[in-house]
Length: 369
Ligand code: SF4
Image (cartoon, rainbow, N blue to C red; front, side, top):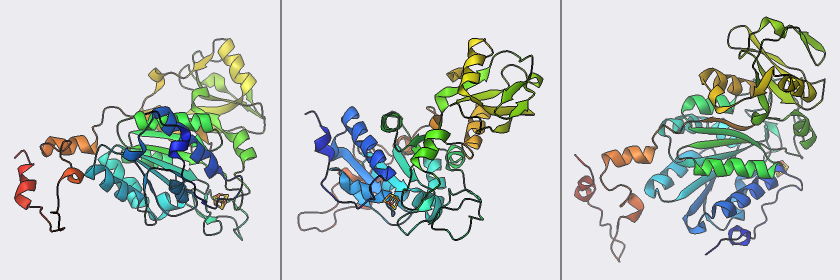
């Protein structure tokens, strides 16, 4: 049987505001399900509390709409009970990085084969727009009486350094790109996380679609210097003495023509990083001073650097992958004989009258020791 988009759509009114970024994320998920032909009977969607979490009712798959902040432990339980299932979480930044922080961090240690998609709109939209953990200090979306006085957390850094083996960032209204990231995350074996920048039209008048159209930088557009520059280069309105730096030490991100956007950060020791106008990056590449970043350039310093700049710039694309780490299910199977053949969900736990039949001796039989 070939599954079509209609086979995944459930007729449900989730009540989102017209133009909400969650529509884009939902569309990207439908596209991925069709592209990968995931069997709806073997796919479980898990959500928490918030606007985005209502999305799971729009899908004709199994689902668990759980408690605030508890998506990850519920998803982990589902996956461990039946490792055959595709387990995908869709929740929001308030749910996952606020009340759910402990689970967000700790699940990284397990590396289960679960996919976590987080709608990041920087506000608690369902409860009328209070600051969420990803709202930057000094920002004041319209529901706040004063600018935010707390620092924002960096979910990309937290995920990478907590053990997630696939980390990416997407944009809600770039449906094809987001779908491709979700596809990569599902194909990846292990705990995959995608932070999705999602405009909330109703409560966030700062991070609008227009804002993201100007601010987003694709990871694929990052270039690296290949030759020492002989003379200073003009970056936006700032003259930066790039000539002080050696080939391979300077990372430049290709950017749309917009001289107002000019960032300079430290990279490695005293090196600098800058966003260049697109024509300047092209000029460097054309003259052999820079090239697009390749797989060989990825190392711990670069990954840490990308995680760091994701606090300042909405970079979009795959930021980190680790194919080496075994999944939690694989580690369980090393200890419990036949775990993949008889996981808990396939064991008979009661007779026809509903009386429990589980015997501890039978469970112990499953152990190799
Ligand atoms: Fe979307 Fe914001 Fe409306 Fe919630 S309040 S449905 S996040 S636009």
